[in-house]
Image (cartoon, rainbow, N blue to C red):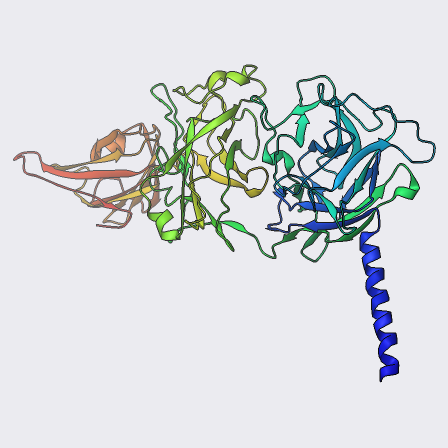
Length: 604
């Protein structure tokens, strides 16, 4: 046993020594990532990436570190910022051990040194005057691309101009103070916005100028500028892990970096994270009153309250979003509304009529369903259809059945708001109240279907909901219906003592026609068609004997061979409108009389 013991110890020491040597080898990068759970989404924030560079690592001007998103995932929001590694004040720089900064070292004495490039064929370094340039990475990716690149270069601290080959060829060399295992850590996409390390391009300047940091008053570098947002709807892998593949694209082949460590930057939830839900009473989307005629005022209709929807057609309409697995994250949110008519955007005749919408976040469904009031959420920006050239001046408002360009708001986006969501509150439900909407009767018509595209996003990226919601159809159902009136008894029309009469009242808003059916006790039957329509809300009345000879009524005998009016009879009147009526019998010599109501559609 003793003879075997020492070889084992020697072998173990050799392995440990080799491992230490591997870890401490130059140009090795240990990756670390933060892995959030995210829904499958058009655009959502992924996690951060940290890079631990080993001792003696060299980064040369023009070197590129590249991360490729796997399995069809792409960046959904442009990334473009400068991350400083070395301040350029002196040849040697101490990154320090402040982990709150995007660049940090293991020990305070660890150094980064800018020196002439040692790559084959490199020119001599011409040092810039101290403090005129600094050195670091340009971090860039385009929306729709799978590629994120970090390019080594220098930045003019006055103009912000970036050049990956500036001041001839240079390299940044990392030296540990004492231990070969010391590392320098560089973090990206971790929401840091440290003023002395991070700058973004001034879009108003000519060319690329990284001069805007977090202290800028007009367009500061924000935490959102140091994030990565990804589109996972294109994810073509059956699993749930979103990973990146790192690569080193050095200027000199002998300076290639080797990567180890974590590569996962997000994990896609197996089920949908957010969904529209309803309260206990099922919602019914109704018909919108379409103002017509000279006296119409066309007031705005309101999806939430049901104002100016056709009576009895619209109820229990509340827009409620539920967070299905975890409460809504504490963040700032923006909500966009875009009006559509028959599925089409643009100037289709319906417009946002108010300068704000409403919201309420709660823990339970009962709370959000039973709430009597919501909180105002103002709109920040408005969009008019292209035909309205003064779109920048468009505002909701106005009145009447014609909408001017100044009020044709077809899309609106709210201010950023936390929507009352707090970590302690644990809100699982978010109710949104839509603004009211105006319409132009010169454009919309009966039967047009109105919908709203509702987009709820969290800052800096993250689509909570993107749904098209139908909010109504123009035009109320006709208020008229065919009616049958039965007058069960009349004396003979040609009688000498009693006479009979009847009235038919059009109680609808639509003109219509009447057809009469007279059945006599002697077996004769006659059909009479009244030629002149009965006007809406008017009364058509006649004596029975007069109706038989009225030239406006065309009679056709359908049974028997006798004369009309020579026997007791009953009358059935069929109308194309909603009707009521009255029957009347009187005695001529003495004036005695009686009246009755007809049976309507077979009912008393």
